Amino acid sequence: MLDDALRSNRLPAAPGVGYKPQHFSQILEQAKPVAWLEIHAENYMGDGGRPLAQLRHMSEQFPISVHGVGLSIGGETPLDTDHLARLKHLVGWLNPASFSEHLAWSTHDSHFLNDLLPLPYTDITLARVCDHIDQVQEVVGRQMLLENPSSYLAFEESTWSEPDFLREIARRTGCGLLLDVNNVFVSATNLDFSPQGYIDVYPLDQVGEIHLGGHDEDEDDHGHPLLIDSHGREVVDPVWALLDYVLNKSGPKPLLIEWDTDVPDWPILRAEAERAQKALDRVPA
Amino acid sequence: MSVSQTTFHSALLDASQPIPDGLLDAEAQPAGRRFSVYRNNVAVSLTEAMHQAFPVIARLLGAQNMDGLSGIFLRQHPPTSPLMMLYGDEFPTFLEGMEQLSHLGYLPDVARLELALRHAYHAADSQSIDPDALSIPPEDLMRARLTLAPAAQVLRSDWPVHAIWLFNTEKNAPKPQAGAQDVLITRPEYDPAPHSLPPGGAAWILRVQDGQTIGEAFETTVAETPEFDLGTTLALLLQGGAITSVTIERLDT
Image 1 (cartoon, rainbow over the protein chains, first blue to last red):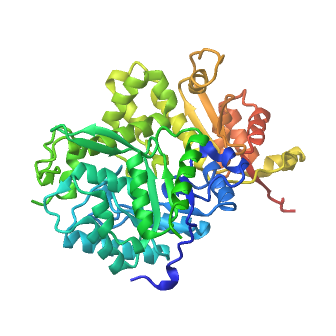
Image 2 (image 1 turned 120 degrees about the horizontal axis):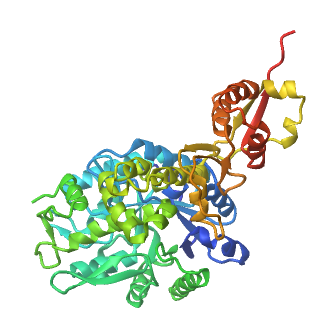
Image 3 (image 1 turned 180 degrees about the vertical axis):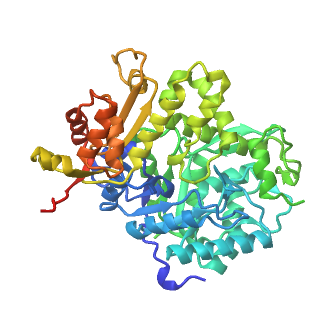
């Protein structure tokens, strides 16, 4: 269980965007382009060069959120201690405003699969995920936020609902939560549950950050809608509506626009961040 | 029915394997092609990573052939680290083993050059010396040892690898001519640049990197390659900011 002194999430309850190097000069040229930036940890684990130089520069002007995509917290095998050491190093020198990872696995049998893969929600996986998060928070030396996944399928063996599973992880480990509202919408559509119903039982008091992103639409074998979490387009209206539903219950939170594939020109990304600001403006005081 | 990650993992990378039991859709029916979303995510993201890592190989082969080749490579050599910036180290050797590509014998060395450029891009920063630091009497210069920047790299090839790279990355670059080429990569600030080395240049730099003095390396190199021109090679290193220190040992008197 985490020491209270290590709970140090300092992201402002305002819009941020996922940082892309092609936006470097526009972000620096504009007055208050966004309130904060998020980076994928693994892209900044080289020894030097432009990525680290840009990150140092950005971190002097913006709160930075370090978002890991490769730790494989939901993996059956032990965490990669070399990778954990790299994370500790990055978080150590950058001292970011927030640090987060995913409820997913990506490494098995020493292969890194470059995707966020699903796990069943059972007592066994719960204990394993909690052990891994304890280890991460101990090594990195601060609280982490854990993000809910996008689901395309369910596990027959699961005995926990996802919100209960996340709440129990937060209770046992002291980690915070990163609520991806698009992921809730994608999973709710794919697995046919109510996204508002999910939010009603989700521990919003543990949320340190909210993600918003775009998804693609497909169909499964039976012609049922199958949404794919692609981060390659605008956030859709029903997800903005779900955000309003969340913010009405939770109060203002740091909001992140994720756009990782087919990255648009800066004005389009900026417009999404402005829409997020409007959602915050609507939250009752 | 519990699904182990071993089962999930092997079905992900091998589409001929059945979809694991115990995975369900919204109506508690077998997940079917929903599993393919993960198969697709893995294959597409790693194929994209290969295109980004080896743009000249992709250009030489065509995008479709690069997709096909990446599909084979990523199943034989999935990443072994979450640092995707390092993915593809085995690609040159993999290309050497592809019989269908044996008529394009230069491909492995072009891939080595692209890998070396990527390593140089992410290499540690360093401070280059003032070029005047080498404006010293010749006898001192010959006794000097150099430290090279972490980003500085040498690649030796039996193919015109620099010319092939240039022809596929720059407009109006001349058509490559047959012949061996050695390449020096420097990174003056943040952008790595390959330079074609004159005869003997690569051998001399590798000796200097090994710790030999400028003079020791010169003598061995000139014995092998009489036309070796120290000045040109030193100038390439200096202009590229590739020398980070000069140490001159005092003569015992």
